[in-house]
Structures are given as structure tokens and as C-alpha cells.
Length: 91
Image (tube, rainbow, N blue to C red; front, side, top):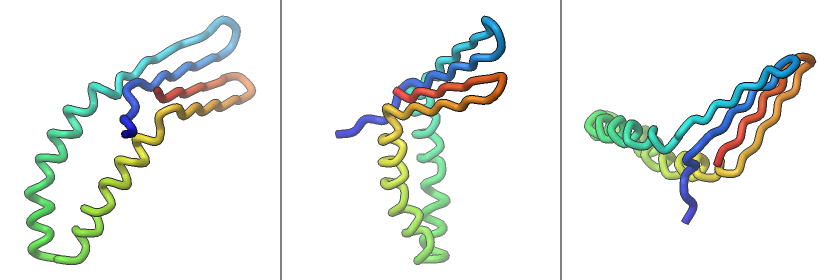
């Protein structure tokens, strides 16, 4: 099973000896996403009764979106400019 990423690290390098590291705990966002998903379920069921075709496509796309999010684990992006460098790691 593929687990979703739990930490995102952002490093900003700019100028001489100017380095900033940010650690973003993605694990803390899961309870918020769960509550938001549960709050949106009644609206989705209401949409299913009003327009039967469209919400099912959205509902079937949710597992694919979760799989794409899980596959972000191990992603490394480096952006380099003339004066700054930004590195993003997802673990």
C-alpha cells in the first residue's frame, strides 16, 4: 500500500549566507481534510439527487486524486534563479 506524504521541506537559498528551511507537517492536515470531506458529503448526495450524472464522475475521480497525492512521496523540485534557489522535498 502506498502511504501519503507526511512532511514537506522547503529550503530557500538567497544571497550570501542567507538560508531558510521550512518544515511543513502534512500529517497535521489529514484531520482537517477528513472533516472537510465529511462536511461535503451531504452536498454531494444532494447533487446526486438533482443531477445524477455529473457528481458520480467527481465521486469516481476522488480515489484517483488521492493516488496522485500519495505518489508525490519522494518528489524533489529545485528552482534556480540568478539570486535565489528554492528546493522542495516531499517525504
